[in-house]
Amino acid sequence: QVQLVESGGGLVQAGGSLRLSCAASGNIRSITGMGWYRQAPGKQRERVATITSGGTTNYADSVKGRFTISRDNAKNMVYLQMNSLKPEDTSVYFCYAAKGWIYAGDYWGQGTQVTVSS
Image (cartoon, rainbow, N blue to C red; front, side, top):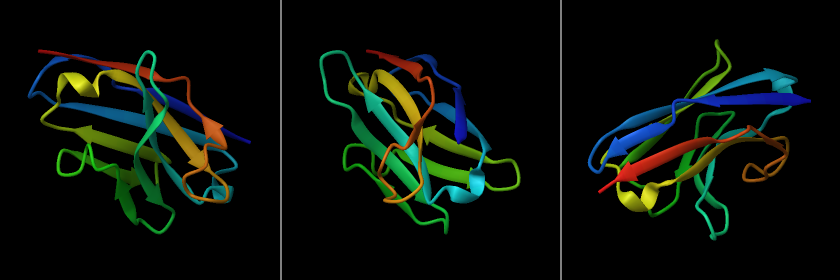
């Protein structure tokens, strides 16, 4: 099992920045990829960014050039730096971890709210 705990959400004005953090614990060696999904009210969950165990990153087109995913293997942490935030980025952001296909949400955090005001 893997446990994930997010932090760092909040309220920010459009154009501002936030950094989300995800702390992983448990059977970390089984993880092939980690990242973030988001879900706004009434919408489907959307994958935002992924980083593989080898450090390869992948982003949704909607956040490319604005968001950066990174990891600190020594601390078992994954981060999402979000810059130039837009009101449409408002969502609950969920950290996830995969144990096979890198985009699979095999493990989930509890979610953290990000609200961007116009």
